[in-house]
Length: 325
Ligand code: ACO
Image 1 (cartoon, rainbow, N blue to C red):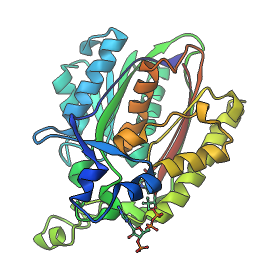
Image 2 (image 1 turned 120 degrees about the vertical axis):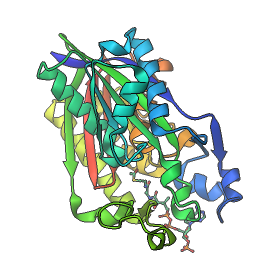
Image 3 (image 1 turned 135 degrees about the horizontal axis):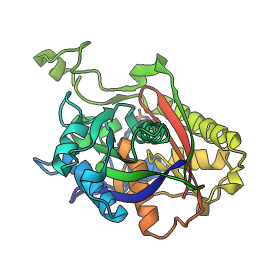
Image 4 (image 1 turned 60 degrees about the vertical axis):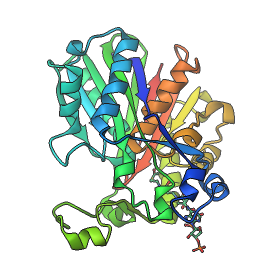
């Protein structure tokens, strides 16, 4: 028995913010952003458009692709760190928007690794026989958690959502293995300090820009490349595969230099790697499911293909997942 992906969907907001648009907001330029990150544009949620809206559209598209109604879903897990509210979970809002009245729903907070953590949760649930069908979603509106006066961070992120429908099926296709990791000793290298229990809401905190993402990019870069490489090797080795066996590598799309450095260490060719960071920037937990959906719609995923997914994010959290398509 395996958890097989039987439908994919994604959604990015209509509004596109190019690097040239950013030049008018902060002291930056298109060439710097492209050279350092590979990002050319990103999508930004409209006023009144929230993470749950993006998630629900992506999920509906995945359900349509699977030929299922929302009522047939038993579980919804949403990977997000930019949810509609501090609580309750955005997954609850998505459940209501979809009318998935037979599903229970919760969020997973694992930053950019959120989708892989959520996927592993749903896989465990299906393999344990507790349900038959699950929706796994990665969704973010990072535009609302960015300090738009900080050029070090605001150029890197975008909004979007991706979703997959998982079904417990007999056969060889489905999730083969997931390796998940956390190292909580480096919180301050990548986090949103406020407003939570440590820094509750205050005017002073707002002045210090506490409710926005803070990052030490150089340090994050080194960890990301090392951990995504190590976890990819480990999950392949456990399942008896080599890098050459991978048909498509879909890494978390943080920036092109992290992706290229990781692919190089894994000795993967360009043809083995899926890259779309130029169009969306870093959409955190949404990058991998958006990429899976694009790869599927572009015909790059054939039955029997071996798919390697790898992510790294705040926490730090990281993971590697192997899927037989
Ligand atoms: N435009 C122009 N100049 C800029 C910008 C900008 N947007 N941002 C920073 N600079 C300047 C800096 O101020 C610095 O100037 P200085 O030398 O006068 O001080 C100079 O560019 C170089 O800055 P660095 O931080 O050293 O640049 P670096 O080459 O490290 O690139 C980057 C920065 C792109 C953030 C890189 O560190 C990186 O990719 N880190 C990974 C971070 C990441 O992707 N995080 C996402 C979340 S985690 C994840 O998803 C894996």
